[in-house]
Image (cartoon, rainbow, N blue to C red):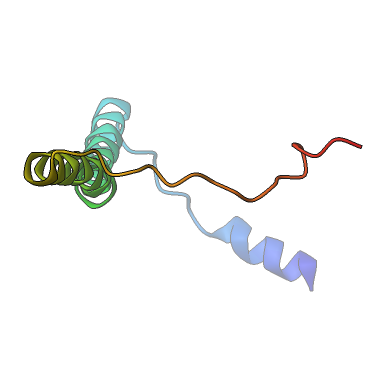
Length: 87
């Protein structure tokens, strides 16, 4: 069975490779376009919301300090970690 398949493949002609310069240029253009789109999507969906969240927390603290005249107390982590415990 394997020899039949190989014989069938031997009868088929292999098309010539595409011109090197055109092929390389097309591949680079497609890859660069895809990477640029992915970078913009990642920036808009991940980096901007993260930065805006932290910026809004700072603006909220500024507004709270302006209204009350006091800083909001920072919540301390009161849970003990395994690495903090001494044996």
